Image (cartoon, rainbow, N blue to C red):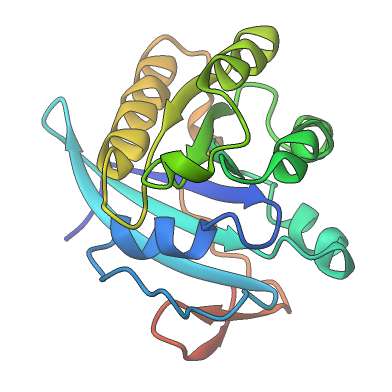
Length: 203
């Protein structure tokens, strides 16, 4: 299916916060409780319809390990949507949000739509980060905020769809330039692992 627009997304945050399962759920795959930590970059896509326009979301799941930090930064280019993820049962992952956000704002598009995601809402008994803390962080930095569960699939769809509508709104108002969301044909010599597990060159 040809697309009217292509929106590039990145999913960022510490290792173990559930980024890979967030992507798996969005593209219709089952939750994987033993999914190995991402090494480098994983990729998936899905087609949406927004205001009768065909929109393809290209979603890049980035590694949360420090040794891959420079590689992850290169994928911020031309991203117009981002999910900044922490684990509500890990205060450490919440403390690291500002570092991830600083990198994204420094290397990414100034008008990128960012959703702050508190994942693992199904583990309420183990919660270390109050919902109000997430809301306060989002207000401070002008982010959309949601708590979700990749395990139960609660609000995963809404996180992507709501942000895609906001991107589309910005596109219509000229806040986002079309060049930021069109496909890029230039190939990069970086090897990624797609969600199917096959290796291929990023393009």
